[in-house]
Amino acid sequence: MSDKYQSADLILKLYEMRREPVLREARSWIFFFNPTSAQDIVQTLMGGHGAHYRMVTTYWDMAAALVNHGAIDEAMFADANGEHLMVYSKIEPYLAELREIFHSPHTLKNLEELVKRSPDAQERVRGIRERMKMMAEMQNAGRKDEG
Image (spheres, rainbow, N blue to C red):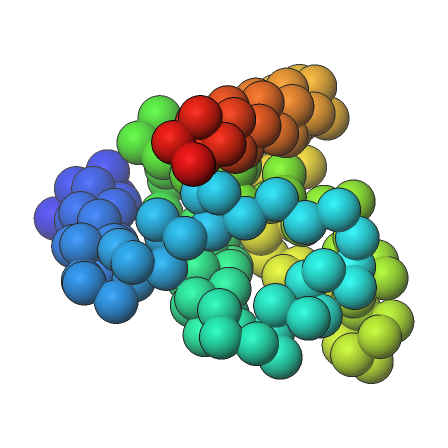
């Protein structure tokens, strides 16, 4: 079995995991979660969406570890996925502070390492962050129009 086939097989297995109902719910939630501080994330972790946050971030950190350790071809992974960039874009501004708060210097290191290796990583993450903020504003404006 070729390395490319094995990479494709693992990517498909990761995709199947993403379809699991609880993870799907968590992924839907994080799409509109737009923290403005590390404290927002801490409060989320301690609240009703803490499991959603942990499920999504640890899922993508695990997937990144598979890529970082060579189990999945990095180019193939990048071509097949983009959600990890969105997740990272939401937490990146607060990641160093979160690591200090929780005394956990390796929190999401695999995800960070993978994202930073991607071409134009800073620009891509910044652009995704801005698009996510814009979509959240549009969603909030829609809610105001409904009420």
